Length: 310
Image (tube, rainbow, N blue to C red):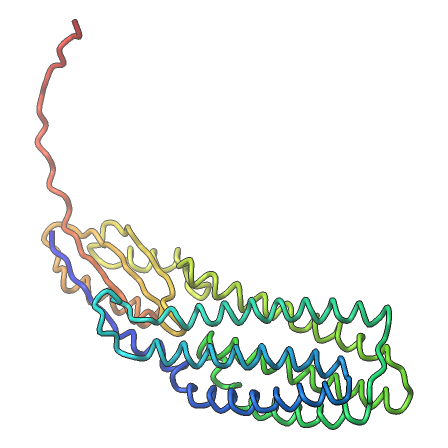
């Protein structure tokens, strides 16, 4: 049996997340500062809306902190040889935790909205408006810092969705505050709460599902396994494709392993090169292991008789 292996660098998989670590830290700082402002403002004005939004901001602070910490830990060189893949999966765990946190917050928003429909609380519209405008400015800055990174890292995407949800929440609070200030129509507050909750839930569900697929090592949705297997089987002198596994290690890093059985006398190096080219260029898999196997030797037949049991 002959075999060949080819490995790409998994460091590229963290390029998206690590590139935005400093931006996550900036967001963590400004959102954390505004959380304190909103909490104090809610207590001083006795505004349940502001206090609820402050709770949402607290989840943002926690989520941004986890996202930055995960990228920092995953990017460090591990001295322990037991971590053969480093700590890259911390990024996915942080994304899953963010999704779970967002889901709980969205459900709480809906629950709180129902309570307010039954008994709309009186709030100080003008104070609510001032604090909400500050919150909107803070969230717009964080949104712009993270928007590009959300398409490159599932971890940054989780933080981005939290900021986006809170930005929309600030817009809702501003509109509600203006209406309350002009009309004393307090039911507008729970109406916007329902709208925000319904916006957050499906996006949070998609993020959580994506993180779970990575954690259980499901094949990436962007890769058609039947097409990949057929492409490898079409290589000259390849007789069988087996033990094909494709999964995602972390954002931007898909991994594949496969065994290729070749005909007797075939150039294994040529087959390895062809398979590597297919995996990299057609399916964008850079970290891979391809094992090329010679056909099994035929075992000689042995004639034998079985003794009758006594």
